[in-house]
Length: 324
Image (cartoon, rainbow, N blue to C red; front, side, top):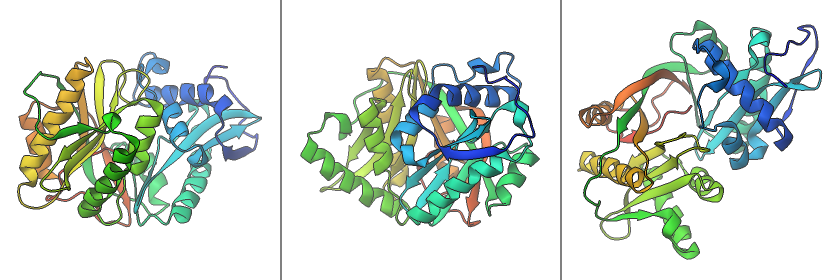
């Protein structure tokens, strides 16, 4: 059924868990909503072969929610648990039902998720030029901070990166150890931050791989959770770094350069032509180094935070993410 179908604006709205039979309709609404807002001539084609709805539902079906009117899905929202950090999105509503309070209804269950998970720093990515979006999220205690640039560069084949290991190539026992080392690294970046959910979701769904950089001793110097190609959040011919970080402290900038090399090596190995990665502009040196490498911004938005604190978006952080 087309996402353009009109529904009585007087009909009551219900919110329930998103279930597998809803995914096709939720995906269509997601594309049409974003495409319409951004003025794309054929909004239903927006995002191409990238998939945000099915992948996020599969990662945690209990944190995916549908709004319905007269039994039809008219919007959806997703929550993500990164340990002490929680974020949500994409929140989308069918365009003919915009400004009817459905977005607020879809906020309620994700805020409940954050309470259950006991996340301490919450966030989202939205359009900086949209007062409507900023005001909606401000009502829930989120505050806009720095812009986030989602950047892209053409992949170039370079020398192999020393100490690079792929999570997908590890044995079951080695993966367990790697997850522990990953938690230690992200804990050093921000207290309680954990990317275990994303690492295991990428592996379970076959969306890409996680790059691990071995450091001195048994520690990790860096990690990057990467989506690769069509059917993932990357889309055709793209390697998308959903999250990347290096161990803080002396030489963190050099470790970041090495991590970027390792991600580009993965993209080349997968036969992908473009590398996508986002970073918050509060991470000033990380952004400069990406720009110096040829990354160019193709989409820009603002991250909103609850409480109004930087979290891990500060000048000493060498982190890749975008909370879309």
